[in-house]
Amino acid sequence: MIGNQFTEAVKRYSSINGGKFLLKAIFFDMDGVLFDSMPLHARSWIKTFKKYGIEIPEHEPYMNEGSTAYYTINKMFRKYQNRSVNSDLLEQIRMDKHQYMASLPPAGTVDSMPEFVNFVAENNIDCWVVTGSAQKNLIDRLNMVYNGHFERNKMVTAHDVKIGKPHPEPYLMALQKSGYHVGEVMVIENAPLGVESAKAAGLFTVAVNTGPINRQVLLDAGADVVFDEVKQLLDCRELILKT
Image (cartoon, rainbow, N blue to C red; front, side, top):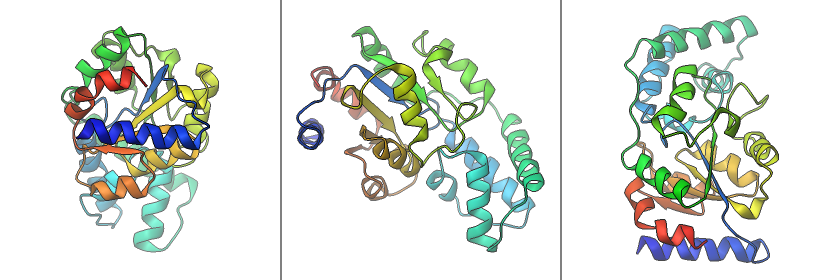
């Protein structure tokens, strides 16, 4: 059934784009897609904001996942305290969150994702990373953990962008950097802001719901199809190759 959903999503996307969709590359988000790091991010954000008098619910970090730290901080202060944050405080909060995150054990890979990445890479699908993260430890681990499929020159990170997700800038930059056209790329995301960013760039977007948010949120963000787990990506791997 999930295969039918994927096939229909591809047909819908292709019809909107003049029937042109020939897959040559996949742009992967990192946190929550390649690494199971979002629970660590959530704990760090909850602890950080509590220090500054803001109690956020557990699902909130997942709703803001993929954005830059500055975006998240500004958004939370506007939402929960109805005020803006000056640049010095922004940087202090960002550093506090970074320190909390660095004190936690390293994140493992998302279940079944190494198998999927190996499969598509071995079948000549180019693999790129487009992430709002600036975490050096995870960025440095990517190429090693994923068997050399994610070289540093095939990444767009928080260090490379000025605006970040949900703005299309990261994915537009990845298109420019990679040389691929819109109809040659599939995006794999797990967060609504990331989905919004990819769709604003005109890309076919698969959302894998690896967090505690309602799948409808991902559909409302514009995802072409939503998978409930990475295993469903594996179930569709032959269909993906034929795209």
